[in-house]
Length: 418
Image: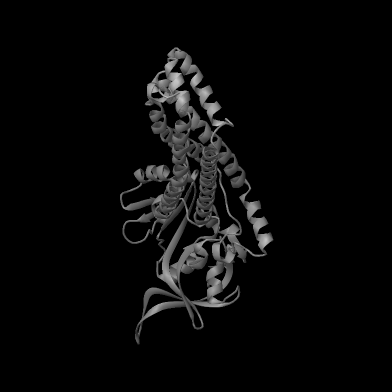
């Protein structure tokens, strides 16, 4: 038999071996278990990657709804000529909106309850251009900061901790000193709660907003601001836009973007995704190398067939191709079914979660604890392709050793007693 003929028929013979009904029952069970393991591993990996993409998207959307794309601050002190700088930055390419801000850590209190917070003074007129704070208001509105008196807008969770509602008052203490005849005292002010916001993330528990005028009085900024908030035309192009903007400004200004201020958080999420992927890929690896057991048993069963093929002219490469095809067919069925099952589960994870909650009569994801009411999922074709390719490569590696053992069988020894 010519080598070219064996090369053409090797895949065909491998497929016949994979679905033959004459195989040993135990070998069939091992092959079935290997395929089921591959199905489970591939499906689990696709679903988990989709859920982690969904969580990362939710985190990015909620955190960055309040965090501007970029910041411009003075290297030392505040920015006194901020209106002129604001006009210059607004005309820069890629910049959509600019707003001034002052920020400071503070202690908010109501009666016996005290809570640390981040107090940010903003311009209610321009803040909506750089963040989604106005649309996140659940009580009152951001414009109430410009009303008479000293007002403050609190995160919903922070207001719950302080047990205050719109119309109540909170005592705000900042790390500034007031000089009196009796000595030095921390600067404090009684502010009226005029609104609440909620984005469903950690800032709800520590963020408070006041007007720019109130902030300058309370913090003693004397007409200056800490910096400017910048919104760019593209969130993911913000690092490049801010870098170009920095080149056009004096060296006395420090320019940052969201990837620098919040980058560690998103890098941690990305690293977590990689580590979980590697852990789940080990499940696929175990299933892939179960194919080794299946092929070793198949080689033992087919020793006589291998010897006959070798005597007919088949070379070692042809025998290897037969058993590589045999293993890849088994793996291919498991990978295909697992990928389809994973895609089906990932695209319907919200409905599945709701069905489980209804069946159990309980809420799996309490919004007050997890900031979400259902499992978010973002299925990406890149992740599916990566899982399928990685699984296929592991399966291919698993077939090489048994195939080599099959090709090493000496036909004379096998047929001596036939």
